[in-house]
Image (cartoon, rainbow over all chains, first blue to last red; front, side, top):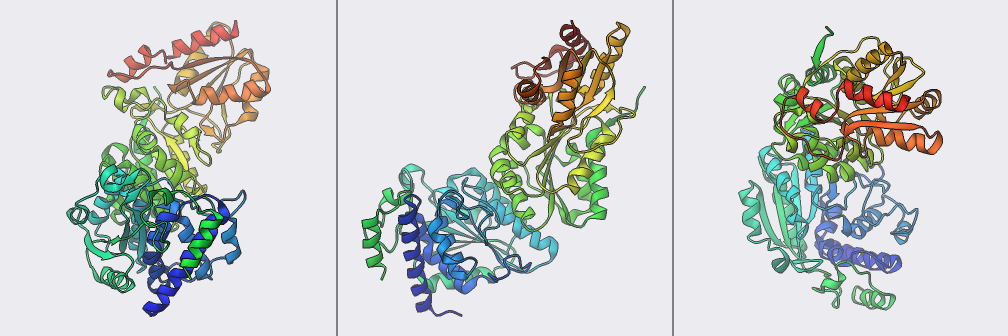
Length: 269
Length: 309
């Protein structure tokens, strides 16, 4: 098991890549990529059973990023894991690139496209039920945005996942409290969020989504739950790690300028 | 009197046949498994059948996750919900990923009958035709439904198969069934009649009546709307005085539009459209509705006379 300090270092490296990719691309979504970084870094480098040299290994755990606009994070952890050479990261959003502005299957390690919000929990449910048919013991993880779960499709999938008792399924909510038009509590309140998931029959874990120890413990707890799916609600800070991006809604969907990127990289040393 | 079959009965039986042969066939439904007949498969293969309740969007996107794990997923509900309610899921999760997902929708068209406008899908072909990767098959009778279902199971990628609610007559001697190859059901040099689904039987009836008036109609069953048999359409456009297109569907965006696109680009000719003209449906018995919406063999005959004149 990877040490906590190693994961923290890895997360810092992933954040640097996100800033560099977005600055090069000139557009994209830094805020939610940075808020989810610790949750997903821990998953990829300490939890997920996968083999980047054999992306279609039948026993691999599945990961799907339903909040597809945060793909800079996904691409960074895929490159860091060895799914493709890192130089590809700097082609993000360019014509002909294998790294699209929202994820699709031309990227090694991406199994299902996303971007139109609200569909990824269903995608994960499908992967979970396929494991049941094939009697395989892989697990399925899916990252959801907090704004995203305003989509009705999410709650259809939440109902179905507990109906089918999908205990190999773990959803992660990046609860940074912001969406494009402002604070989630002002735009469309999600509270009481944990009670909603519990009422839908999910094992619900609330953590500090930047505390590696809590993150790892939550994934361990999820693995041990039987008969129901688990949701990890990670309380996070939008733009985490870069002082002038933290809790600034403008950085939901704006890339840092060259100068901002340099400043951000200084902070992420 | 010709044999009359429910296409959905044939669908259910064919699914069971496929289920026995292929362990990777999985079937989804959204609380309509008795109407769509996927319930027959559910009974025999409960471990490969999933009911999603009244939640078509979730069903469609879940099919994508399932298909990403190597399964061929048949997804069924009424045409109105499969193509309308879940359109974004069909576009982004099914077709963009080019997955082996076969949307077999029943209760298409005005002949849904008494349930009325909310349940009568008159625009489903249009909605599917604008999505890249999606193949569209509209079988004309029971036996062709079996052929279509077997074909889409063995052909990679997403499909939309459109089935009707009522019993429809079986058409004899249709020849080979191949994806994207129109079937010439009757030869004639004066006028051409193109049809799909249950309109094929009416097209043949119209051709018979026209023959008695000395007009020879060439009748084509355009069972595959995508990929379209452009070659057969062009050849027919060049060798007849005009074309009548018949569909139990809006004339905007469906078979008629597809034909128009082909002939307008390469061999302009007169095209008359027998279909639903910018109206919603309503309650009524199927035969009465077909009359009310001008979808009978008599309407086809009139249209043929106008283009042949």
